[in-house]
Length: 150
Image (cartoon, rainbow, N blue to C red):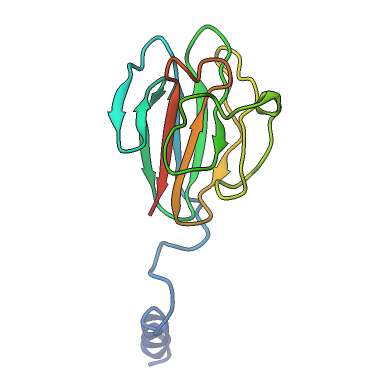
């Protein structure tokens, strides 16, 4: 009888209103990787203007997930955020784009100069919205992309 009562209590504990579903404990969200390559990612038309050099050009992620940029090219690039609803014609990026900063998408960030094979620190998708970014070195190529957090 004790074993039956214990099993009943344990079974009901999983049905507690408001409790997270089983298996959703403290596991970290998956990290979305964005390839950085001017040579293998061609320009495409997007709702924000011409984008390219990042694959995918427009990345959609869930709130709370993480994003990391990986340079798969043989020369340096940055992935650096800037404000606005569309890609400006002239580069909005200054020399600060060359130094890694930021940990969240909403706070503004830059990967800093990523050499061949380098990866950026992870960025947390902490707020819903669209985040535009580009490469300091090749913005006009157009090396630009967007992350949409839903």
